[in-house]
Length: 258
Length: 374
Image (cartoon, rainbow over all chains, first blue to last red; front, side, top):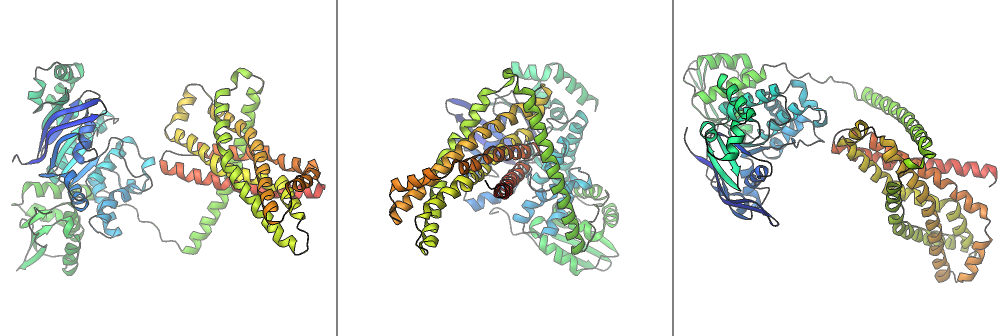
């Protein structure tokens, strides 16, 4: 795998009032990999994701997406760049006044200039790729189950065939079978679509099954970013408790069996 | 993108029995791919895919629709030199497309649709009135249950609601009725002036505000201002499962949320009606003084001669309207389901309904009072 860097985070600082979340944080995301980002509650995982996709202006430091600083671009260029990434928000963030199919078709109509019919046809394919049943397209988000919301939201994130997708706790709130399916779906789509994935997660099984690298956020920076095997042998106390606690060991054993 | 090279257009090249695809088959080329495919019949012979320079799901989907899923599968099996990631994409897509097709909506004539819609809405309206009476019964039942148990009275919530729905509404109610009072006086001056009876303008203002305008303007403002707030407050709690949480904690949402609101409006609407009447008089008095040269003393003298029953006829309607407005506002909140869009829909519905009910009841009351000679 070539090590082309898609996202470079350099010296990122995020402060909210007197509370600082990130200090001098560096992180790279390489093309074609699935990067898992872990950290205790309040270590700023979601804040990091939001800084990278440009929803938060960092207090200091720089985020370069595809070699460009999103916040320094004009509105038009920024929109162009934003079309190359997809985001799955924690709660799904599906537009509640649109059906699932319309949710996925929206960016296709707005950005790709497709007719409504073409866009909905393509949306149907994305829904199928995300593993949703065929009647789901006509439903409104309020009537979806948790797992379906995640899948529909993934379909919308994939609508524009992005290079990178950002996932914020995609398996949180799913049952273990649904979560395992989601991991497999992610691997399949990565191979089929050549996706690069930035995934904030707490799911130890996901980390072992799906991730190529894991970045650990701690002490306001990325403590370590490496393969799951090597990260789990890092001597830091928190990492040891995380990976070698009872749940961590169970997840590792399960991953070893597969 | 600035960094991207100019994309090659999608192409179909025939050479003998073979059809070779090349160029960019991507979302950006969607329109051109469609026109290229539409101009060519589905080929019988061999199809080669390996010269395609870029392929994404949009291009692959169009290709699959053009060739048909089964044909694409054959092509894929025959194509041995295809890049593995392209193969993975097409295989994933074929798997996804092989599910059952979504059912097509039936074509129904517009007339039948319109009739069906009419029937549906009539049924909805009937069901709605049924629900409204049911909810009113529920509120009254709960109220009776706690009426003689002062320990269950929620004084803090009640005072808070009185503050929000009553005190905070005084400025807008006063301003609005002042203006309407002035307008009614102008109207009276114009019409009655033709008969040389300008002095009766004062009576016009007095009777209209005491009997009708005071209570109805206050009610309509409350319907717009408070019924909508009730629906949004309770509705967002419903959407957030807070009402379910209350129930599982053994608490009654009607008692906790609805009763304080209903009781608050029962107090505030009569008070606001009084404010509205006084403020309407003030508007009328100003116009009388400035435009008709009727001194304030004379104005007040005429008002003082109006029998008390006219004031009571107006005021007696206030608690009824208050109850209706509060109950509709709360009930629409309970009917919210899940989403934020639903909160918006029910808020609109609660305002429309409560204004409708207020005017309807007022018309019935006017008829009744007239027949009774009050």
